[in-house]
Length: 80
Image 1 (cartoon, rainbow, N blue to C red):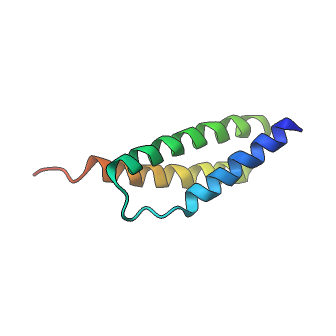
Image 2: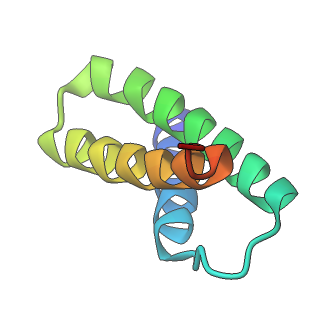
């Protein structure tokens, strides 16, 4: 029962993170969002290892894509 509650809380946080707007974020907000995404992905991965639910894998892929966009923005444009 506790496992189910934890799973639902993590999935709710992940959905909120997906809906979060990325425009007009400060650098510190981006760093915090990147860390939050990493934490969510790792937690969902642990749940995925136990039940192999395909929807969890899709959620992890979407979160990873958003995390990569945030990190790309953090690194900035390369100097040529």
